[in-house]
Length: 294
Image (cartoon, rainbow, N blue to C red; front, top):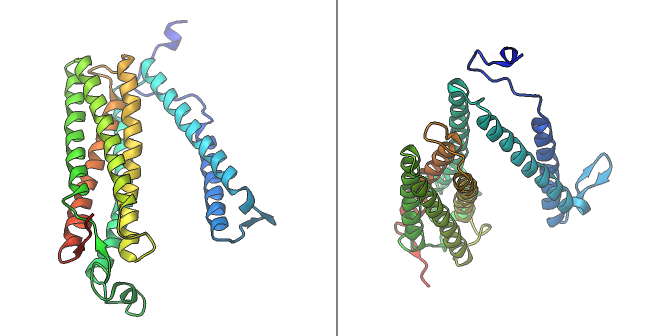
């Protein structure tokens, strides 16, 4: 009987799982709730099959969000369990890496869209759509009357914080490869602290920014690009916090640690995106502009 269950190949066929369906259902409910919520805030109706969902928007969104988070927890718990059971063979691990690479590539294209919007508005502020865009920019960039943030104040602090976090997560990775559990835990703990610190500095920056999202195309592109990056930092911090808890529980080994490796890749991606944001959205866009102080 034991031979009947022995594994003679590097592939793993997973058991039937409810998580793809439940995750899709949660995403659908969350998106409907989110749209209804925005409609309600705008004083509009959102009707599906003759039912106005605007009144239930908040609860629909929360239910969908709960389903998505529950699916994420259970699905990833199953993946961790499969790894402990020895199903993550060389081939399976390679495919997991391909999956993470494709995910980061899709995230890259997501940010390309926001950079595209920023450069389109900044490089051609008075062309192509004279009747609309030039009206909001005055034909110059940043738009006339807009005071920008000092790139060498809080943005520079956050740049240093993220570069330091990239160093600490790399330290944790090398410590893991050398089976240094103490170095792994300390490196991850410092990275999580730096990620939280970055988020607090960015929140403070937003609260004291001299322009709003709806003031101009500058504010819209600035907040969309930096805001989504901030959200990715938040997600990456949670990702690394989970890795920290797993490391403290002794989950990772020098030969089997894809979960940590994926988190490190994601964090380095967040670092690189920020360097582009700092260089162009903060520094380049501030050249010749009025800097807000105080």
